[in-house]
Length: 209
Image (cartoon, rainbow, N blue to C red; front, side):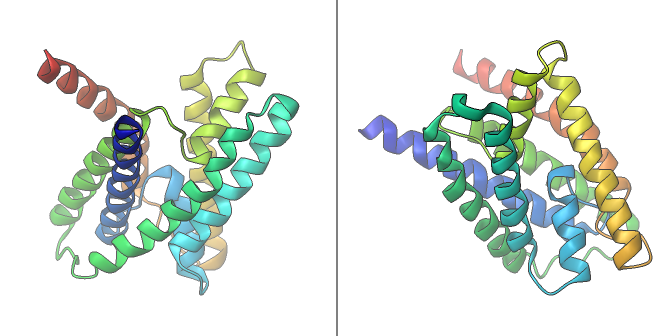
């Protein structure tokens, strides 16, 4: 029982740190991670918040998982519904907590973007450690991997992330008339979050020893 509570707390902490990292990257104003790029652009062009759009997009990802996997979809993974709600709420809370963050120059924007990447990577690493569940975006990539067995997970993840980025770019140009919410920081995050997660894993294993 205690172990289960501990695992749940680690999972929730991971989601919060990831949400906080997304908020930091949004405040840095160089573009956020691919998973939040589309919801961020939508929130800039309309009234609802980033958290609301993250919830909506993640619920769509969950529906797509069910359609792809069919009867093989484990009912337990419906826990992704409350996970999506928590992720959205945590993101809006984190954005509120970072209202003070307004980098005054391009160098500081990059410094905060780097900090956001590290936080997102740390959050993802912690989220995956208990092996309880995952955010629906990752769940959809897993489902696609099951369907497209000849294509490696890493390749599908890369295509998935860049598809979200392209959607964000097109939406930004249509809604805002210029790029906002998805910029060079988005490409940086897409290329670096994975390696930083692996680095955190290596440091964790070394500390365990």
